[in-house]
Length: 159
Image 1 (cartoon, rainbow, N blue to C red):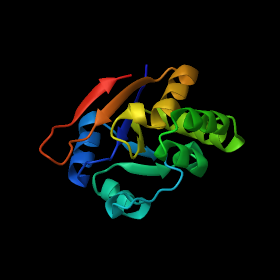
Image 2 (cartoon, helix red, strand yellow):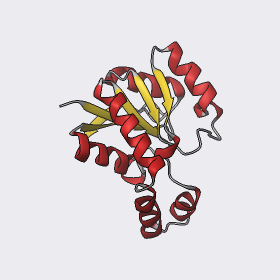
Image 3 (cartoon, helix red, strand yellow):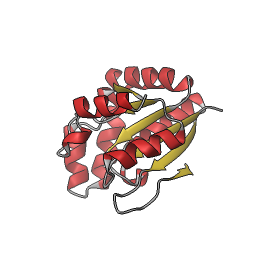
Image 4 (cartoon, rainbow, N blue to C red):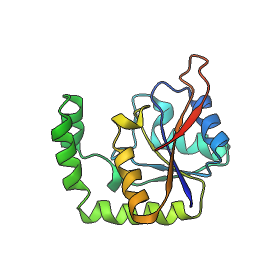
């Protein structure tokens, strides 16, 4: 069974983030944010691509797997049910299904990791995306927690 990793960059220094990916054997990072931008510039698409390339890790953005703006607004407002309804509808769109198939194709080669912002996968749509990939393609999901920038070590656990 092929492993599929997930990671969030919340609270992680870029060096800890990359170290956690390397420790997990990640060779390609699949960005599942709708918008590959961050207030933390080092996690915006261009900077992240360069940082990862220097570490020997490829980067691909799968915009269609991201949470639509209305879903992000619901999540930010604490409306979990609203978020889940919006994201469930989004998973049925052709763009989502196409990018899900592309992500699965990439992940079958091994060493793939889904990335979004939230540190805790239980608070992030990437767990839903990973679960769909597990259910459809049989991936074993392993979440990576990058060190929190406070000396905290990287860790991983199974979904």
